[in-house]
Length: 287
Image 1 (cartoon, one colour):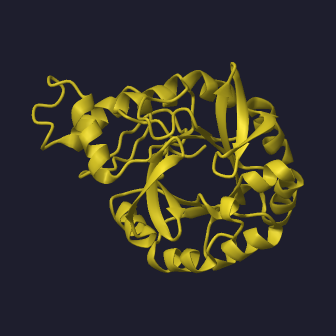
Image 2 (tube, one colour):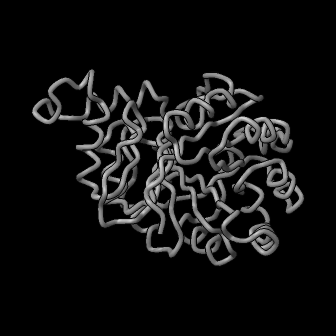
Image 3 (cartoon, helix red, strand yellow):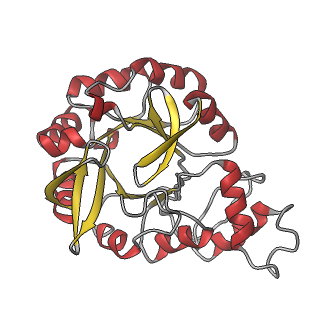
């Protein structure tokens, strides 16, 4: 398996990067190409761009934006939002995307996953699943979390794997943007599947990241944080005895926290070239 990956995710609405809480209260935070280039320069392993209003507004993901990203950024990136056909996926891959995510359209027509995986390969298909817990049951949602379905999370995750998805990106709507941590028991159960599970939404401290990697057995992490916010989290999450001057040594603090996970972790701050050698080879990701 791959090393842990750091993969910032940029949510896109009307061509701009946005952030919010529980899929709402969205605020513009910058140009997606410029932000992506900044993340790449800071050491991100991959990027993900999700056009979160594409399905809701009934339009396809902007192919032009994908072309701009591909021309500017030299690390792999995944694109999702409004992909409803093999042709949609092919257009984005031809424009330069390395992988595509499918969500609402796949819930409506699960055969879409089979079709894309059959033509391009499972390694190009990420099944994005948004869900929230209702009366103790994880219910799958679509259209940017606005429509509740009858599908149950674990049954749907098993089906997308069986149909050919190469990875699963799971976002808990109850945790997204709250920075209260991840539902680790849920991720641990999803991790029983034989494909990588991407943990998305909920990181508020380095401990949250360590917990979802260990207790949640997630393959990758995806904290929706800017570099400044991540630096602040690192500074506030470590003990003083471990880092003498956290304001000056955030990367060293991150390395200490990461060592408890026992994986090779590319540091996403000022010392990105520093990494830990460890026995595990599971991937690590950050949104």
